[in-house]
Image (cartoon, rainbow, N blue to C red; front, side):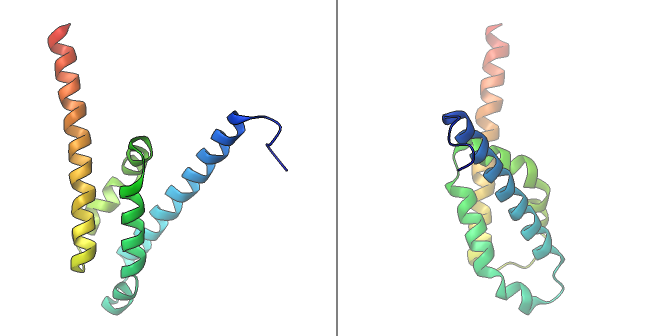
Length: 116
């Protein structure tokens, strides 16, 4: 099929394309969820939200960073909704991970400034 003869580079490129499509899908889904006016409709989407947030948490460091870069404001907007406990709990874990990543970057940056 397509891209097989090129070796690993094509694999990386196609996995990058998949990552970007997945990111886009998550973004569209979060946006749609945020715009729902009906509480019942939003409740029906609880399993979808649980899946999206769980998948985010399962990502590698690099994937997670790319995801957060694109979706951070939507994730913040979720905080304005009355969310089911399970969704709120996973969202909390996402923000804890964002905080840990940010703080480790900040620490690294401060150490580099200190050593230069």
